[in-house]
Image 1 (cartoon, rainbow, N blue to C red):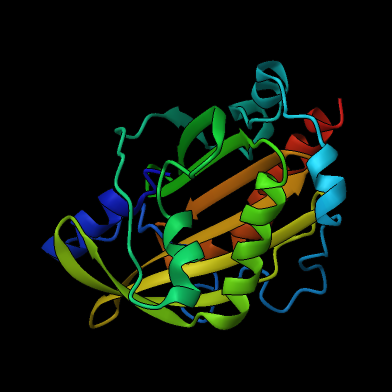
Image 2 (cartoon, helix red, strand yellow; image 1 turned 180 degrees about the vertical axis):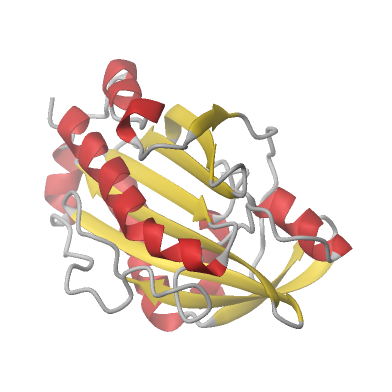
Amino acid sequence: MRTRTRRGVAVALTVSALTFTAACGGSSDKGGDSGKDKAAGSSAGKPADKAAEATPLTAAQMKAGALTVADLPKGWTVTKNPADASAYKADKAECQPIADLLAKNVSGATVGADVDFSGGNGADQLTHQIMTFPGTGAADFVSSVGTAAEKCTGFKTAMEGVPAELKVEKLTPPKTGEESHGVRVSMDLGGAMEFALHVAVSRQGAGVSRVVYLPGLPASAKNFDDLAKRGGEKFVKAAQG
């Protein structure tokens, strides 16, 4: 998830038009609640001993679980964001899982699919990443996001070498898989400007799906739930074989 963060931060630092990838969710008061009030929410995952028995996903399963243009509403096209190995350090321990969620690389994970799309005439940005973990890694990762979403309301970090303050809000995207969670991470750019990244993670066995959406306009945030559901359901189907 080179996570739209890098590009979003660049936009923030230049205080230019908010085009995307504001590494953090955007579905709430400033863009239409993307599922915040929906009944579907995160669910408890399998006990750790069961998660430990899960077999890592194969490369074929991960590829099959990733979204394609054919899976998306009309208007989306394939794009490719630049690679980024940046990691982020939160100033609050309870927020570190959210900071980790903004990084492309997740510790212990093997990424098997990483696809980028643009929509809304290029203003909206979407990334779908499928990864697998050994042992209880998938359960540990997704559960940590759920715990952080409950406790973390914001944190400070450094992006592009520049101090940044991010606001975190828990989201409840449509439930997919054995456990799923969502967060909106936003950054005030001054005035009415803001970048907001919407992120949904879901787990099935030893696999994890991560959907990251950056709406180009606040009104487009309402599309997050639909996109998270499409990505999560396709991933689960592939993970189940």
